[in-house]
Length: 117
Figure 1 (tube, rainbow, N blue to C red):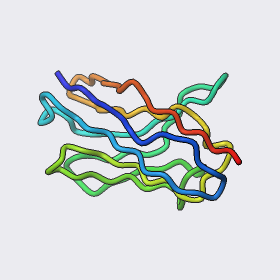
Figure 2 (figure 1 turned 120 degrees about the vertical axis):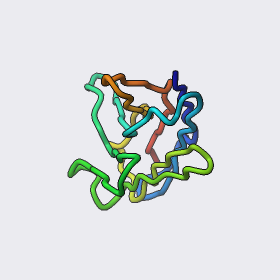
Figure 3 (figure 1 turned 30 degrees about the vertical axis):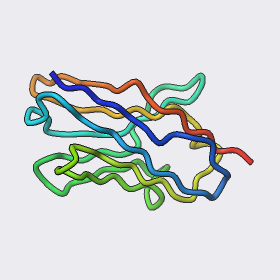
Figure 4 (figure 1 turned 180 degrees about the horizontal axis):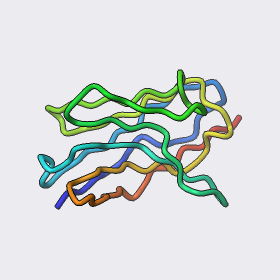
C-alpha cells in the first residue's frame, strides 16, 4: 500500500507564495500518476495539478494555470505544489493524490491553505 503525507499549508496574504509538499511511502513503485486537489467549504473537491510518473506530462485547470506548478523529487519520494500569486479564492484544504493500478486512488489527510489579509 501507499501512504501520503502533506505539509506546508498556512495563512498567506493575497499575492503571496506557498509551497506544499507530499511525501509518499510504501509501495511507491506502483504509482503511475500523482496530483493535488483542493476542497473549499461548501464546494466539491477539484483538481489543481497532476503529473504522470513515467513522463514529463503535467496538467492544470485554467483557474491555476500560470500560477501553480507541480514537480517531483524522486530521490525524496516527494511531490511539490508551488503556488504563486495566491488569491483569496485559493483558500481550501489541499489534498495529495496518488493513482495506482486498478485504478486505485490514495489520498492524504490534507493541509489547509488560507489566503487572507
